[in-house]
Image (spheres, rainbow, N blue to C red):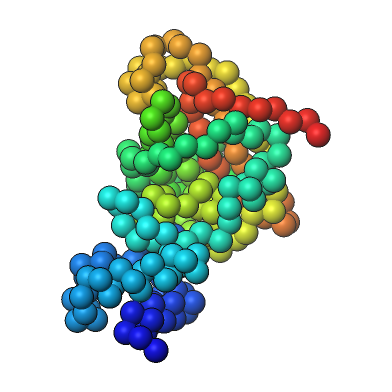
Length: 227
């Protein structure tokens, strides 16, 4: 076995053991080079091998991540009603990430106590011709090991499946709203301009709520499928 294959095998073992979970960020190539005392070329060959095996995703300018288990096709099949018309390469810009109490409104939606803690995460998905704002509400009890770095590489469904429970059902709602000052600035539109607001409520096999996601977009194109 060649040296780069041994390094790839070692990293594969760490991934399979759960040391690096789905969406987790791996050490950068420079750090791996120091850890294994090898050349940059050897490290890159090892990473290339893991990429070929669909175990690692290399995000240019961002880093190395454990590859997600689900594909865009899985997400389309899961959501059913609203399907994005096109997919573009985009970057994700984290805006907010903190723990807060669920409060009376979200505790009712998530079926948890008002005093229970939930992650509030908001970020922008920026593509060449569009910006989408996303907000995730994740109960701490279901996502005790949540790492915000997974936002950079995982899709919405993959993020929701990274906790203790797995998604079995999805309730989705589409609203037409108008942009307030904050949304107008973030989505590069005018105040009071019409926006799409998509609400996704994720449930487990027992119809218990797992997480809530909101999406806001001004020029996102959707295809409505009633079949």
